[in-house]
Length: 537
Ligand SMILES: Cc1ncc(C[n+]2csc(CCOP(=O)(O)OP(=O)(O)O)c2C)c(N)n1
Ligand SMILES: [Mg+2]
Image (cartoon, rainbow, N blue to C red; front, side):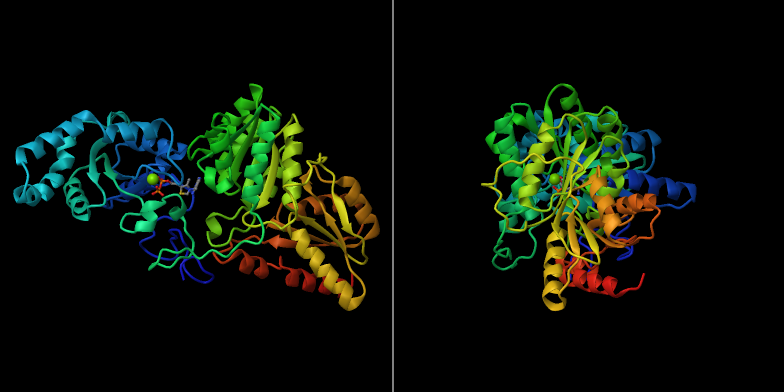
């Protein structure tokens, strides 16, 4: 039932287990949270040991470094265990990564190890004492490295073999007696013990459902391309077209499709590590310096960079393109990962443009249009998963005008205003209604929630007094909010019903189940159209 509807979450969640001491789904939070626990225990006179576990990739995140900085100075009793498997989802990068690599290949450390082995010689005696020596290793190497952590106010221990459970238990037992900020550096292998996972660590970071016997992953043959493929290929095309175009990703190169640019034009590709805030300000610098950055961040992770989007990009009106992959409901990853808030959050920022392409072709053209636009941020949000199956590779680049929507179907009684691919579900629903009942609502693709097409809205308000907005995002402040704001200005009595994500957290399930539950499916929309039509104003 893991990551399934009504099952358990794929991430630690306080309400699910006492062992989930702190909920998380976004990286790099453990040190700050642990420091909070340690100080809470101190304040209340409780004698507790607090341990933060953090990965080598997550340690590159700014939040982790803020936590280290504070914890080291606070002199709190806190143990940070660094799980260093030498990989993030993709290759780990950056100066901290290089530093960890240096630490673990430090000649001083290796020399100490070698001297011991040499003294022991070969054979049974060596293997018998091997465990004893490994157990002693943490104290042996104490002081032979870790100067970065020592400078941050931590006592550094390790590196030890984190896949050797006995060694880990023994080391933790010893460290238990020590107080103050401690850091234990453990070396592990990602996917250890399961051959397919060891062989392809990037794919097996999140493999989805698979057969444990054979290692075969259950993937349905996809009928259509994924949005990340459209983004990845289009970015390469734009980079070929315009030498100023560069790609920036905070550690999600494979996930967002930017691995294509990294393979084909490595000099135009920047993986900055798990650093969303930095990714945005770095992109702002690139734009101020004359480049055309396409910064791709998963919608949910972009929440980390809210201030950078305002202060560093929008306030200076810099031409940064921010592509938000995984916008809307994301399925099995659940509440920590839904990209619900982007439209509401970024709509309030002056200078921001927010495009919501309805399909693959529109995403392609919107990226092209964003490349041509010299102001920003130019935000483009699109969902996780597969597209509508429209021909996009051969389609010509079309320049779209921000603030210009389109009417896809002229009808009567109700105006349905949609943002994003849900417009296809609305069209399917309206066609079925037409067949069965001989009427159908008008369907509009808003295309940009900011600037919003005021001309089109004005016409809609003149013609209709029943309006339905449809969006794969939070209702409050999103498309629903935007349309309501304009409707109020007319002084007319207009009934607006919003279909989208309500003011609550949506748990894990498939994307289809989540959309069905919120009325975002064809069937759900059909019912809502019929009920709204029958209602007296
Ligand atoms: C703020 C944020 N950005 C990006 C991600 C996506 N993400 C999930 S795990 C991961 C890699 C983490 O690497 P590491 O800390 O080394 O952990 P490992 O999986 O190797 O144990 C990334 C980038 C995230 N969860 N949160
Ligand atoms: Mg790692």
